[in-house]
Amino acid sequence: MPCAAAALANRARLRQGPLAALAIVLSFAAILWALLPQAVAHVHRPVNRDMENVYRYLSMTPKGTRILAHPDVADFIPLRAQRSVVASTETALPFMRGYYRSLVPRINDSLRAAYATDWDSVDAIARRYGAGIAVTGPEVWREAHYYAPYDALVQTLRAAGQGHFVLEHPSADRVLYRSGDVYVVRVGAGSAGEDAQIQ
Image (cartoon, rainbow, N blue to C red):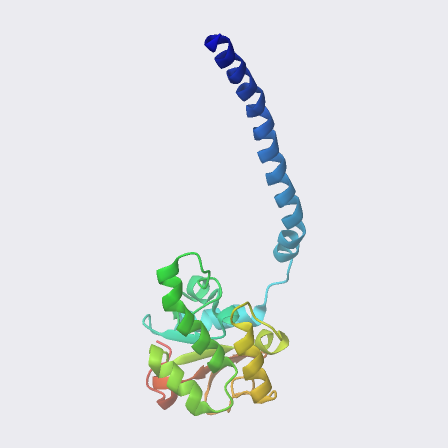
């Protein structure tokens, strides 16, 4: 009798195997189907020529140059310009606790710099991380929100600045390079002009 019960249990498991595999495949297909429109839109988005020009400019700065930028603007700088950034949205994923904990202050400071209303604040943040250059672009000012838990900080900074942010329209003496509305500016140690020169 115990052998017959074991045989029935094995048969039931064998029948469940194909059903479980089918459920996994269908779940995976549903996820792909849901994400497909976003992926297609992203692939067909036009190339931002101004950012491409900025990546080219940044790639000619000294190899050790660290760049301060809004985390969204900073995302592709390490890949496209081969330069280090203070923080980026891509690296701010909270899956690795120890790493993420060390990145939170960098994200907060990058946002504080992006929405700063005076150069002293931007320079102090840049010096803290050894950044001599800041990059800013119009997407920073178009987007009213940022990812949680940082959005509360962004809303506070935007309300306090009332649309008057120094990196949105940097003074001419700070601008190292401009392409359209995307600026590369001297900050921190580079604000004196010694750090961010092209090779």
